[in-house]
Image 1 (cartoon, helix red, strand yellow):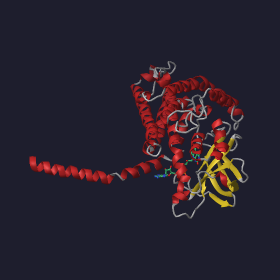
Image 2 (cartoon, rainbow, N blue to C red):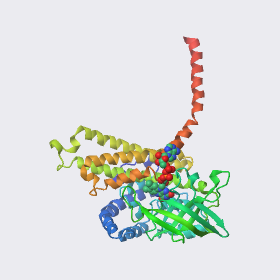
Image 3 (cartoon, rainbow, N blue to C red):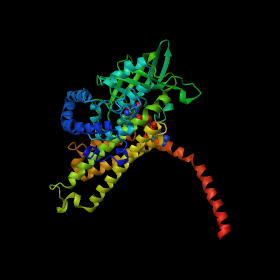
Image 4 (cartoon, rainbow, N blue to C red):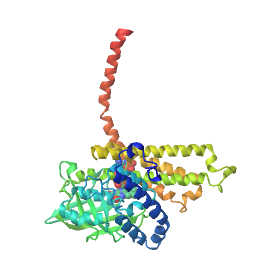
Length: 436
Ligand SMILES: Cc1cc2nc3c(=O)[nH]c(=O)nc-3n(C[C@H](O)[C@H](O)[C@H](O)COP(=O)(O)OP(=O)(O)OC[C@H]3O[C@@H](n4cnc5c(N)ncnc54)[C@H](O)[C@@H]3O)c2cc1C
């Protein structure tokens, strides 16, 4: 474990890696370095020609990665469909994947398919797994997760209003949805939709259901493709949708009516960690670009290398410290999930989700600055990296909502501290009587 693939992995994590994980991390590293990063230019050129078709080079890379056994690595080892890594071991792979924006997709480890696969593996029955999960695991189709709506505050998912109404052996869906993969890519076949199936249920946690919707359903219209800070994220993209009396068979319900929150709880933890680890990989690459700029002899303001200015040396040090701190936080969340489960890992997951996107955006921003004007252009991957960090502040829930939850839980501990501190005072009084 001396090579560059393991350079940033902390010793306490190295001590936990199985031989299989060590081999996989090395293979993922070789894959990203030798097959993905050199293909970035070709991928971009292919997308310029055919915006909403998965480029042939991506298809070929997916085939090759699958043949090498580098597929679905994210699925933790407690699933029977898992290739066998823990969340902690996969996190080391995810950071390496993050070095190239789309490398995860070559290994079928990209959002939202990762979260969707985990959801289907966890909550679907045998028939549903055969029909919906298997093609996703095989990498034959793409999927979408559709919760957010344009007309309600979707960070409070109890407000989701898209209607799922039972009529005989069918559910009828009506409503508007924002986000979820674009239907312009013909490989997008499966939508996991969250809607309201029992609006008058006294418990707001039991009003919603999740259903599987085929992307070619009659009555489902994509109103437009959305851009994220000017980027359309083709060929996967994000859409805005209208459901107008879309009919699906009742067997397309996941777990049962009213159980969407139970499912959503189980879905989101690992996906958030994957985004965070990939962002750390993006930061490492941005940081390397900044370092290269710092020693570039053609860029010598006032006759000095950019990296010879004390202020920049300090910036480099600060970035290094912040990247390494972020990694510790996220690896701790992954380890907590492995040891205690996703529910017990709630705080550590929220901690990562709150800290990493903000810190990553700041670091990438600083790297752009050191790089000069070109750092803000298409001549470097820095602008897309920054956009990625920025959007993860909202995707999978805004950081404010996570802070709110952490803060609320912390407030519940206040009374315990009050009692403890009252005891300090009592103890102090007793001692004062004796000694003062
Ligand atoms: C690139 C990208 C991809 C996405 N992909 C998907 C997807 O695949 N599927 C999907 O369903 N959705 C997706 N989303 C949507 C995303 O999950 C939602 O935007 C997010 O959950 C917030 O919901 P909202 O937009 O309705 O904002 P709101 O719920 O209206 O929140 C807006 C703001 O209100 C404030 N706020 C909210 N709650 C609190 C609180 N508790 N305390 C303090 N302030 C608060 C925050 O500032 C917050 O940002 C994606 C978003 C982006 C940007």
